Length: 46
Image (tube, rainbow, N blue to C red; front, side, top):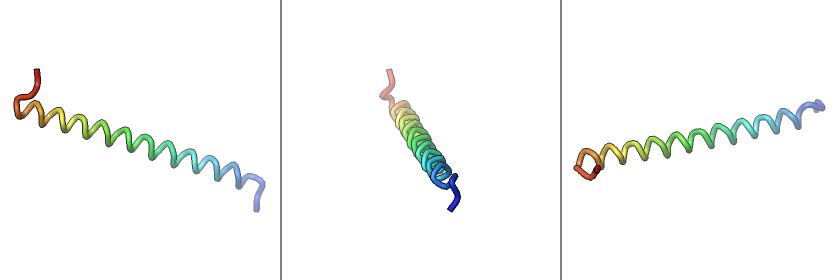
């Protein structure tokens, strides 16, 4: 094992955490936008 293996492991974990977080934020935004479009289409907007 190399001495840099734990550091690489932590970087990889942080990268996965950031990717999962960004993906969930993007999915939430897309869902909110879709709901907004649906509500506007059926006349529920003010």
